[in-house]
Image (tube, rainbow, N blue to C red):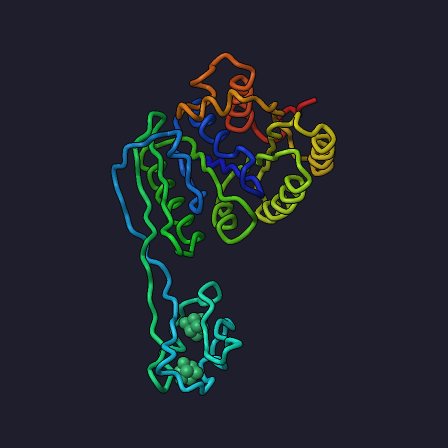
Length: 298
Ligand code: SF4
Ligand code: SF4
């Protein structure tokens, strides 16, 4: 069983559109939407939900100003430097730095700290017209997208193993943070979707560096390559210098948007178009050919 993960280094490159299109040509595959912060593969795949599960969030500490005597004990003991004095004098806990260890709650002599968790993260197993999809929904204000990514990937692998599926196609999260590391761990191949902008090239470079540490085969696609020929040239040079096969260069075409508006993949909407042929080419290259046999785009 092979897991192929689509990543982009940044949002808005067309990664999900390409993931959905690959889903429509893949055979013997289970699909996973690991872009849990902005999960939208389901908008095209329109799945029927079979199972809904709640994922418990981490604890986050909260200070009661009324009870706090400003002894500073919690500030001193928080290993994650999450507790600070506000300019106005009171204490506050940064929920993004708080790791939910609950030490401050135990040591506070005034019982001025309590911990809460929202539990608004859900993940689903669904049926789509192309096969099983495992996806998630992060609740407002929830953190821990890395944990949610790990959960949806674990369930996808379990389903693939139980059904004897040959492939997992994962729509990965953008960026290079914790959710991406969770998505890279244990994946076999990465398909980078790059857009020809300076920031697209920069972010792709950082992601390629990160994926390199995991010793994973990396392939690339340049999406909307003709919106900036100069940067496309720079990306091609970068990929060549880093021995990353460039599978196809997809032109900008409003037909991609038209297909999405009808909740169809490009392969369903215009099966004989050039872009649909490219989608087939990507799939054949990445799924059915070994890394060393992939031909680079001239
Ligand atoms: S340990 Fe308790 S009383 Fe002391 S500063 Fe922290 S919250 Fe306030
Ligand atoms: S729960 Fe742990 S990480 Fe969070 S503020 Fe308290 S001591 Fe710091």
